[in-house]
Figure 1 (cartoon, rainbow, N blue to C red):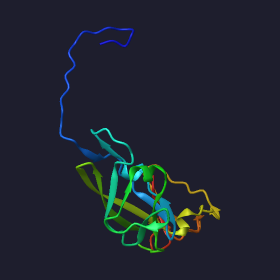
Figure 2 (cartoon, rainbow, N blue to C red):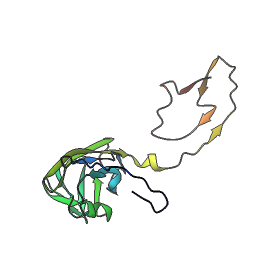
Figure 3 (cartoon, one colour):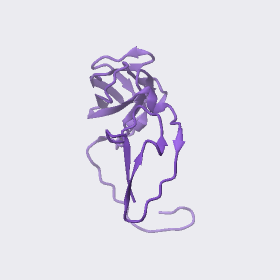
Figure 4 (cartoon, rainbow, N blue to C red):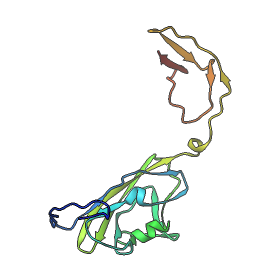
Length: 178
């Protein structure tokens, strides 16, 4: 063997294996409630030991999402209909949330490449409109805490209007421990 700079004498051993298809990316899809977002290889990235073109790898929808629709070019993909990896790469496949307030959704697909199949679930996170708005600090006061001590940070010290604010308890105070 050589790289035109170094020469090595040796034996190259090639070992064949059964064809496989596996998912390499499992990033959850994040969508604004009531909106549409494109699916991509971040959610459905696949790897195989087969040589193939992106139009050969097909994804069949096995289970519809409960709180949305899977679409291709604006048309709903029904159960057992398919799209290809080429469609994913072109940004033609999308998930649309039906304005549901539930924070999670999912759908199941089967990837098929020749006779090799792989089933997986695509998870979806649904966030309300307020999540996408920047927070505005209306009041910000200095609180001194000695080492090893704790202090309660009341809403009088910091005011951030944000409807998804879950960092305070029912008394309206934030607990901070140094």
